[in-house]
Amino acid sequence: MVIVTEKNVLTKPLRSLLRKATGKCDTSRATAKEAEALPACEEVERGTWSSQWDFGFSCVAYAVGLGNVWRFPYLCFKNGGGAFLIPYFFSMLICGVPIFFLEVSVGQYLGVGGMSVVGQLAPIFKGVGYSAIMMVFLENVYYIIVITWTLFYLFQTFMDLPSLPWSDCSKGNGTWATLACWSPESGIPYPLSVPALHNISEADSETAVEQFWSNEVLHASGGIEEVGEVQLDLLLCLIVAWALVYAFIWKGLHNSGKVGTSFLEINNSNMTCEMFAQYENDKSYLPNIS
Image (tube, rainbow, N blue to C red; front, side, top):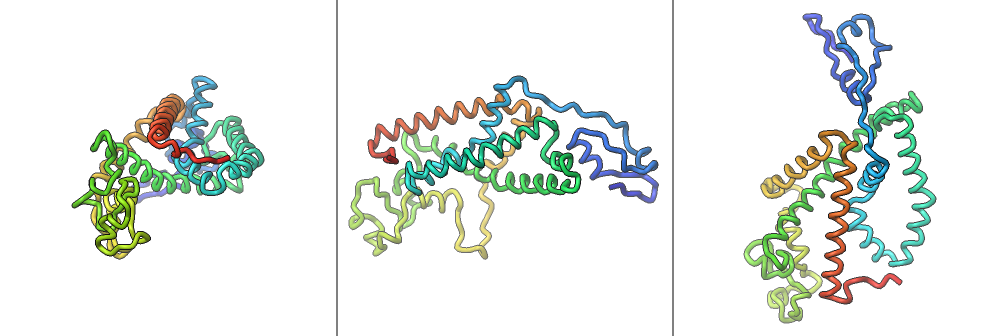
């Protein structure tokens, strides 16, 4: 797309973006006037992986996320325990692994990004690549919020050591805990709890974890008609999250393997320590999935 101004100056916003994204020079469809106005076109050298291990750990970091660590064990336990693993591994071998291998193979063979790979395979479907980039953009915009919540909880864990701020309702008196807050882990039977004294049924009560999430993290309003105010603590965590993302990729995605390796090791270590700590505190913590 070229825009001709009154001073006969050509601007090329879309063409320049496409050249930078694909790393290739394409002036075949440009007119003589457009080609003359375009700057000298140089092929952009794409980054390469330093080793096969670097590429492998990048794939692992791409596939393993918060959903694998947090949501998968919950879904596995909720949908039959060990029986859930049978259709899961079947679907993974039949669908997941072949599609993942196809995606990696095509990307390695063509050596281009996701925006232009479909257009090279079938030029008529070039718009699919642009749509995929838009979907990734929208996904990143909402997924960065999940990372923001993670950072918020991470910072909150250091506020009330050695316990956690959401471990008991008494820690939120006057702030996020309401009269409906009751922690079964506190050892206080419900008839003697604060909600029962205020004629609140057990079904209408909420745990400390739920109230901390709704009242302290989200500051949830009464409805969509109540917009509420900007939460400064979450805003700061959001800025930190975007800064971390930029710091990881500013030298190129080919360096993300080292970052992914480090965070994968840290994540696995933290999960292992937490599992053993919880198991020592409560032997019934680990679910029986047999």
